[in-house]
Amino acid sequence: MNGNDPKGIKTHINKPLNIPIIRLTRKVKTIIGISHVDPLAQFLSYINPPTQLKAKEKLLVQAESNMAVRVEEEGIGTIPLKQHFVLVHGISGGSWCWYKIRCLMENSGYKVSCIDLKSAGIDQSDADSVLSFDDYNKPLMDFMSALPENEQVILVGHSAGGLSITEACHKFANKILLAVYVAATMLKLGFWTDEDLKDGVPDLSEFGDVYELGFGLGKDKPPTSALVKKEFQRKIIYPLSPHEDSTLAAMLLRRGPLLALTSAQFGEEDEVEKVPRVYIRTRHDKVVKPEQQEAMIKRWPPSTVYELDSDHSPFFSTPFVLFGLLVKAAAFQCNTC
Image 1 (cartoon, one colour):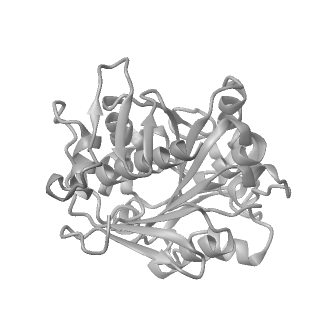
Image 2 (cartoon, helix red, strand yellow; image 1 turned 45 degrees about the vertical axis):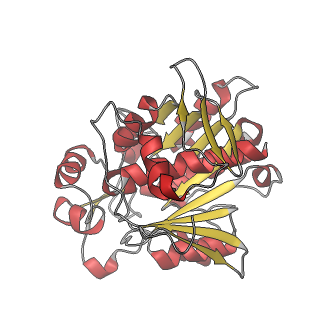
């Protein structure tokens, strides 16, 4: 990719942080449901049109289902077909958020696990009874603990799911090949200071009274759960997403354990720095706003920053490009191992 790409994909270098930033537009179209087209090949052919390839470059060789996928570009080596992605939702969401990404990945031969955290998705716990971050994040911690010692996964966290994968990086660094933050809270130690709260907690006050709140400890105590009211959900969370996806979300979103999430704190450990990190910014985000994302990137710089022309929910609004970025980020990391 380069600045002269005719299709509007640009590469920018963040000089103060020396982080490469790759910006992609929404011109890439989703091909979900077209089973005979390989989505990774389509994505790579978009960012590297065949007429512009160098002699050494090839797009993709898709072997039989039990073989490996090879991406032969400068800087990219062999990608194991069964590379394992673990996808973690944000507050109020669930594993269902990832249905498009999971479909694309599995159709391309990758192994995918989608986690339902406590009180989310099909987990039947009441959010008002989940009062600590350790309790909320236990499903992911149990999953990581059960992984074989010789297996490494790519963790992907969306929104508040960034806190979940950060805790995993603290506790299971040797089992994580790469951590990817998608419009996510990326704070090395969680919420310890006012600056952490300013950068990592969505401020939706400009939209008015947007939350349904739960008070599991009593009306005279701080709220224990929250959910964006239905009438605000599309405007704030899914403005660029297909209507059918925002309708699905309105049916499935649940109150999330607000008190548990804002109590997330991690101790200072060297282990977390062993895990390479990538951040995917969302340019039109009204939840974790671009300035918040930028502040967290500056405070704890990842190795690479990508930018999507997306709302807060790129798994709905730009699923095809998000899929391509996740695969590309994992491919580069594999090549450095």
